Image (cartoon, rainbow, N blue to C red):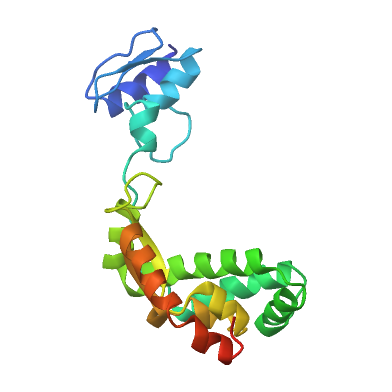
Length: 204
């Protein structure tokens, strides 16, 4: 180790001199991680030539990746709209209405469902974070039928599609609920009893 690097290490690490080995012992979990060269090892230990602050120095890659990030605050309506418009323009459309009309005309039901689901998750996270957390931590995975949570649309997506509801309307927070897959299926059965009246209104 040259004198300049050694002095920098001494100033950053309470006078301790680093050895030439390449094995890091994580200060959080105690596991060992060996690097392919001494330069990678020194970066991990915070010995760099840059003047910036070295984050997560002295910890292994796993602990570094799992370091908690500060969650961002709820996104504003303006921010959500601006980012949605960026995506719509990227797809070649000038307005939300033009984009959604194309989905209906082309019969792209799967795309409609995907967009409604994505916006539903965003709305739930922003406007009802406690329900979003309940869903996120207990998501239905195909095995936890009674306890696994799903995001339910009070007016089902299939009906929203038939009625040509906008994606924004179908995914509105007032149309969302969180329930177990078991309750979801029972809710659908109850909703299906109204199928005759829905047919009469030409929604099915």
